[in-house]
Amino acid sequence: MAQRPAGCHGGRPLSAILAGLLLLPLLQAGRSCSTPCFCFATPDTLQCRLGRLLEPPAELPPAARNLSIAGGNLTVLRAAAFAGGWLEGREGKAAARPLAHLTLLVLTHDAIEALEEAAFAGLPALAALDLSHNRLRAVAPGAFAGCAQLRTLRLNQALRRGTRGGLGELLDGALANLSLARLELAGNRLRELPPGTALPPGLRLLDARNNSLQALAAEQLDGLAALGRPRLLLAANPLRCDCASLRPLLVWLRNASADDDRGLLHCASPRPLKGWPLGRLRASQLGCGGGEGAELGLPADDASLRPPETASYVFFGIVLALIGVVFLMVLYLNRRGIKRWLNNLRDACRDQMEGYHYRYEQDCDPRRAGTGGL
Image (cartoon, rainbow, N blue to C red; front, side):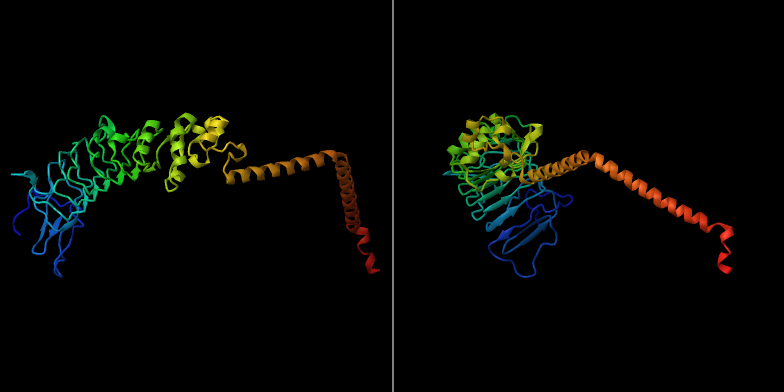
């Protein structure tokens, strides 16, 4: 209890640096951590420490299932970083303290820059790994060796700014031997998708939202098709909407499943189509020929060029304009009769006012004031 675990150093506490550690055995009632900084428990001991985590803890309970470390400064994950490092034996290298039951590992906001060979060795049951919000600049080809059960890998906003070669080169060879079902690459400012050779076969979902994708090359999408046509998420990308740029994507969407995010895709350029939903585009807007538009599944009817609500306002304006034109035409054709009617009205009003004026002058005559008293 009094010993400080390796990797902990004195300093101010960080918020939620190690949280959500779930164990198979339950602790006795009334035993809980009083500080949120560093906490893990076993059936026999309960340890809480204050410190800034500069490397993974040297000892973790072997029954742990879920482990979350956030806000640390891990920088580099070396071989078997969470399983006590390598041990030399007769059968070769092996993890010193493997965590056979760990299925979820969350390492967000930990300033991780490099993953060395076999960084996650000793975690044979690991099924989900979250490395989002880090600064990866180097990933060894065998960084995920030994993670045969890994199905979900999250690398959202994990690429360091200015990394040369992009995420495809960074992950080249690292994912080839995995059996991933879900790969998340959102928020990495990607200008192109990773090549199919850098992605694991059997991938079911590739999340590439909120990147800098303007156009998808046919070779990239063909590489995804060779993997089994995984579900592709592309929302919040600045897509360029012209026939040449959109052709590969439209072909992909035409053959893709109906549960993609095509309803969230919008054009970013050219300016006349900025913000236009991809699902409402027409062949004439993209500059595609009639035959080419039909091949891509684009409607060629210009009458449906505008969205329904816009068309209704336009129709209403046309009706009001026609009514105004008819009204002005009626006034013009009856201008003489209207002028004669106005003159007659003016004469009638003048005669009426003269009659009122005459009666007023008679009533004001002093010679007629006393007549009623005689």
